Length: 349
Image 1 (cartoon, rainbow, N blue to C red):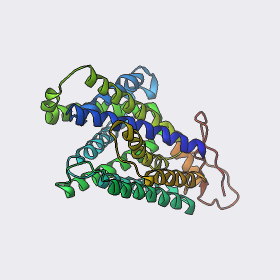
Image 2 (image 1 turned 180 degrees about the horizontal axis):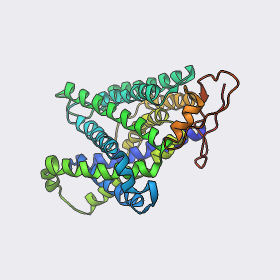
Image 3 (image 1 turned 90 degrees about the vertical axis):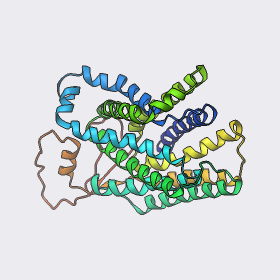
Image 4 (image 1 turned 135 degrees about the horizontal axis):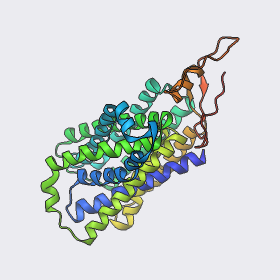
């Protein structure tokens, strides 16, 4: 449980770094280049992971993967890019409080998609933990209102709110798809394909929509350092998130990321002189309690063990298992299994 919570907080700290560098770029240097920032991250993923796939042999080679699944990764790359773009774009239309609250929509999206497509089943304690986490987010939004901490014009609030909901939905689809890939295929394949198609689509979008903004950037060493810091945090987030998802789940990761706004706030108290409220601390500990509740017990797969084995090894042969009695289609799923194991520990009820 503690390992699960700690790994999620590492991701939250990386998102905090992404938020701080983006804030400096947009507000202090007037560099509004969200697509270019995403493009830099995808290029790093391409250089590290796509080239790794290119030098592999056999069925794990880049060309072999593209022949079998190119269109699936093309769709995933486009979804991942637009999810980032929609949420960043929403800051121009609505307030920070609305974005924080509506961004929680990713949680029910991930739960529903995990339920229907990954066949993950939750227990009552999981739903209790989720409720407590969202309660903590509501507490933070209330604190923002009390201290008057608003960001965003709020002039076209409906447009901004719809952008956030659209981005949260795409984030949910991307996260669940990511969980499926890293459990059935590999982390390197996922990151390599995201780097390839993400760089391709973000490059096109950059050339069409943002090339004029890029020319307006007053380049100097400070701006260059901020872009480097943003890219490093983003690359670390993308590289480490599959590891955390494999040890926990997409739902657990998205609950952990709720604390990212609070880490940004605590940094903002010193860097941007934000006003402080005791409700922020209450919100932080409420979210942590919800995370511990959620992580206190494992989810399970509502699927026959023989089908689950095929799910884990889609290219392998289906082996008929001898049975003497009716097998109940329920498998206990251990979320904190070792990374090096070929198969997770399962217990047939």
